[in-house]
Length: 282
Length: 282
Image (cartoon, rainbow over all chains, first blue to last red; front, side):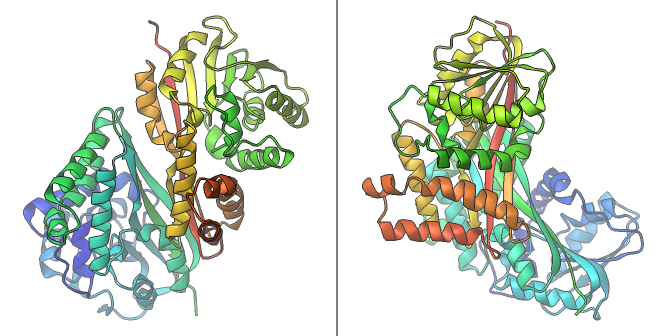
């Protein structure tokens, strides 16, 4: 969902939604604000606990980690120095007193000793990885036995809406196809529980976090249906057309139909999944 | 979702999942028990209030209305005397002291005076109606101004699962197509809010009620994924094959894949929608 997190991957460069422009960074920030309550509810780390945000990107979630766990010792790692610069600036603006350790690093080869952290936080990262199971398994090295991992992902297969529209469903499917072609999985949310199990975690608890907007919630329809989900799909227009997945006309009609679902007579449904699991003592 | 509610419709006879057999009635009862907490949470009517359950079918929801609103004056109406007999027996078995007024009647022409009720409860009924907006609008006649209607529906477009399977998606799509051919809409959940608005209700509040089951919740996976959702789809096998929608082999593979989603490595997601709205003074 939050596509700037592609910077944490080691796979092929992903042009399809790769954006470090100021506009993209703002969109990601707006998105995170709209979703923060939904996604971060239940995540608060004790004072003094050592927390690693894996793949912090431009800091869209980091600001919420900082505000909800002000006493935790937060480290944020990302493959992209440019993203880290933006993340640092974002946190400085929202929480000037916060102390975050920013580190450049690849989540597949993290620059931390074994068991360095009590908790890991991994949000909108797995969707971009060719082998999310291996990534989760590898993260256990830096997590102390008994420590927890929190994972949040969307699932574009959860998107449905009124009025229903074959064109709108098609543009979403094209986004899913482009992400798959780049080695990712926009449907990864439904797999969180089995992925965590296969990666060796215990005490796995995964639950849905659903966004539903209709005409009675116009602000949410704007913030999520239009400015988050539809904007995310819309961003891959050129790639989808270039790949021959859609004609410009069909694409634009699909996007228009998603906008209609954000209107006063429309409805829109999307499910994120949030999982927490424990790193067992071997 | 709860298909015995077809008895409340006035449309063409629906053979595709019409079941008044003992086995079907038990399945519907099991389904309601598994879902009761999810669907009925928040629905409790004051003592003395006059409540009408519209399309009570075999009483799968009636037993929960009775237990959660023991002081309310509950009337239950259904088009089918046979269903009412089963509903009466079900309530007698679960709440021997309960007093419910059972009435045969068509929801499009209810045998009650204007404004006879303080609250209406309509669960798994709209999905079977050719014109759910008109039905909701017509119900306002028997609801006093200021009274509430509670509506609950599923949406088969919310079903997704792991492992993903084109065959499983196809059998669900066939069930949706058969229900549409019979004049219903298995995707009606997403439309609840606009339907209530178009029917003239006010103060509309609709929210998702999501079922998510994975390997950590084997009882829920059995009760919902396997014994409720998959059983409901499975029941239309003969109709789907006869209609040429699927070969027996493809059908059985789709069902097998849904069963796999109910297994230890599978996950399954489904969203119901529950709405409450007020009958405004004209």
